Amino acid sequence: MGIVSISKIQEALVEFCRYQAEYTVSETEVRKLIDSAFLAAQYTRRVSLITHEISSYAIELDGEDETEIWDDEAFDASLVSEDGVIIGTFFEEPMGGSIGGEVMVSKGYQVVYDCATDDILLLYVVGTESTDGLNTFYRVETEDFKDFNIYGFIASVAAQTCMNLV
Image (cartoon, rainbow, N blue to C red; front, side):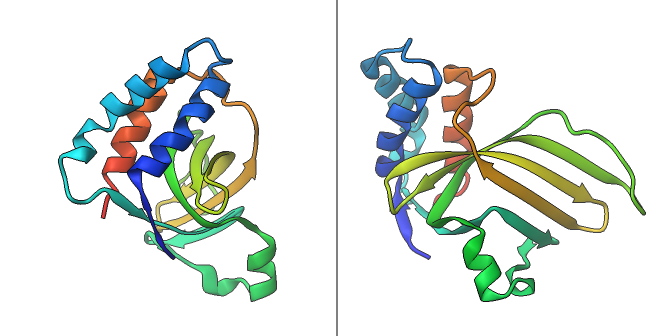
């Protein structure tokens, strides 16, 4: 576990956004958008995020990671990032269902800043949330963010990131 500054994340977001927007937006414009969106972070002393290991499959019970159910070898084999931070989660409308209680299934994307490579990773994620507090996430790396909207994306990532500043 470590700490990463917002400025490093902002820098990595520039190329990620340009790629997802198919290079239709200039680097200068993307930088202006990102700087504007993260302006609130500059007015606080808390301008870093705590990093952690991010695995391709995760189980949470009442919001707490349940990593102890995996043995070390299985957990290590499932790591997407050894030192990263989820800077944005973008789920589509949840699909309902029931298996022994109410279970909501959602799919979408998670955007991860990986400290080891100073890159943004795009993960396709399928998540379940049950009424008993058990949540699961299955993540796999992907290249393209379907229906990517650069303006909405930057605003949302900035808001989600700023909520987790330390």
